[in-house]
Structure formats: C-alpha cells, structure tokens
Amino acid sequence: MNTKNQLYNYILEIADDSLILGQRLSEWCGHGPILEEDIALTNIALDFIGQANNLYEYAATLSENKITPDQLAFLRVDNDFKNALLVEQPNRDFAYTLARQFYFDAFRKLFFEKLIDSKDEQLSAIAEKSLKETKYHLKHSSEWIIRLGDGTEESHNRIQTAIDFLWKYTNELFEDNQAYTEILDLELGISVSALKSTWLEYVHSILTEATLTIPNSPFSQTGGRKGIHTEHLGYLLAEMQYMQRAYPNSTW
Image 1 (cartoon, one colour):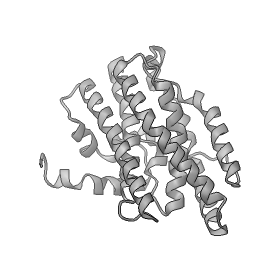
Image 2 (cartoon, one colour):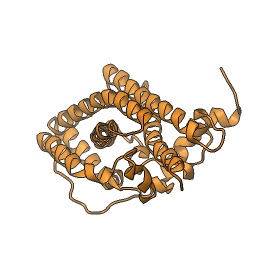
Image 3 (spheres, one colour):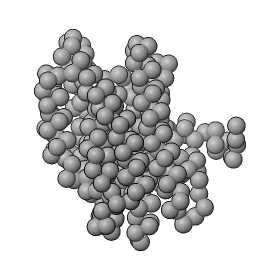
C-alpha cells in the first residue's frame, strides 16, 4: 500500500467514526429527556456529520476511483466501514448515550490536538476546526457524567451500568494500525497508543468526581478498524442508506 492509499484509509477511519456517531446521536432528535438536551444532542450530531463530510471530501480526492463523499457515506457495506465499535453501539437509554459520548469525546479531543501538527495541511486544518467543536462536546458529556453519577440513586446506578458495559470497547481507540507506518513516519498521522495514558487520567478524574467506580476489566472487544463489526452497524446503515439505495443518484 502506497502513502496515498494509506492516507485515504486513515482519513476514512476518522470520517467513519464521526458519521456513525453522528447518525447514532441523530436518533435522539425529538426524543431528548428535556428540550434543551434534545437540541444539544441534535447539534452535536450535526457537528459530527459536518466533520465526516469534510473528511470524506478530502478522502474522495485521494481515491484511485472517481468517488464522491455521498458514495462513501451511503454506498459502502458494513464491512467497508472502519469505525470503532464504540460509536456504533445503540443508544439504549440516556445513560448509555452519555457514557459512549464521554469515552469518545475524551479520546477525540486528544486526537485532534495532536493531529493539528500533521504535515498534511488539509488534515491539520480539519483537525483544528473539529477541535473547537470537540472541546464543547467533551465539556457537555463530562458535566452529564458528573450530574448523573452524583445525582439520585437511580441515575447513579444507570450511568455506572453504562460505564461498565461500554468499557470493553474503549481500548480499540488506542490500537495503532500497522498498515499506516508510512504516514506515521512522514508525520501525516499520529500514534493513538500514545494518547491512552492521558485519556485514562482524564476519565478517572471525571469518574471519581462523579462518585463512580472506575472499570478495571481487562477484556477488550475490537475489530471495527478491520471491518469486523457488531450486528448493530448493519441496522444503522440500513436506515441511514435507505433513501440513496432505494432511489439511486436522487437529488433534491
């Protein structure tokens, strides 16, 4: 795989994370627990979809085939997606949504902070723009983790259950893909494994403030970066891609 192809696939990982999580969050539109939170989650979903669009546009210029951003989003099958398993997990309830968001936001902030230093100017610019949004996302999810954890007995138990359940999907965020050696050597991308210790420190500090127990299970479930997904992604894509597949090349 040459450097251009490595960069193309590397960008798809970042874009797929944003698109799939944006789609998940969009499911809350009209169903939020309170009006303000309904609007907040919808806006965050739009942020992620905007990030995905910027990244897909760049990836399309690197593709060896003539492909559009819409085709990357709507015409790939589940095994072609490179998103982490964490972001495809279903919402279940508000606690699961916030726990998933908190884990990912804490990772994404560190990721974009480092990706700004990429020697690829366009990727650096996307990271810089996305970081501004991600800082808000992390503030929002962190505050909710504390609010639920240090709230009522019911809210504490629900968020603890979600924190424990989703923990097994977090390690995948920090697995370096050996297929990207060239772009890492050229400082076009970053090593995610180097982010884990800082991520753990932040997550532990918030969970401690929230009076929550920090998970210590060593079990880790991975595979998303290689196209091996949970059953949840197929259902998500079936809904997200329906219109484009039912009416190919349709436009407004």
